[in-house]
Length: 121
Image 1 (tube, one colour):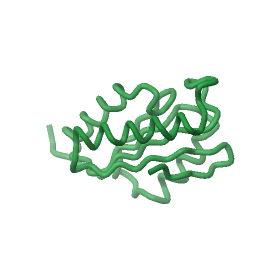
Image 2 (cartoon, one colour; image 1 turned 45 degrees about the horizontal axis):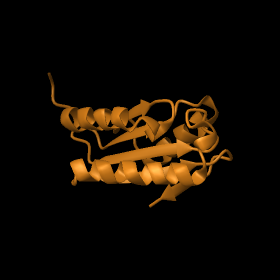
Image 3 (tube, rainbow, N blue to C red; image 1 turned 30 degrees about the vertical axis):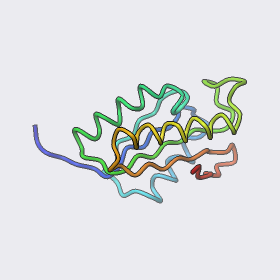
Image 4 (cartoon, rainbow, N blue to C red; image 1 turned 120 degrees about the vertical axis):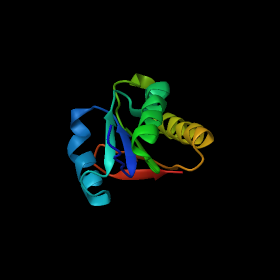
């Protein structure tokens, strides 16, 4: 297997309503072919799956950054999906990833229905 690397893993929700915003965010912040992209219902809602993808991307592509994006009005979260819950889950996910991979930079965002990315820290 040839050695190939990229800069980041970007994990987002599958919701079609947000793909245009996500694509624009990625194109403004990353050059083509410099990231692994993972889409799954709920973003970090299924954290164990996200962590598995981070582990694979780190091992195979030597990433140095993880971008996590959850969004407003997420069906996977249902009624529990308040802005506060998303913020809490994103912060917890970032802490767990940093705990396992201290060398990774982890950035978290809450994407609003109007396409605004709110950085969560």
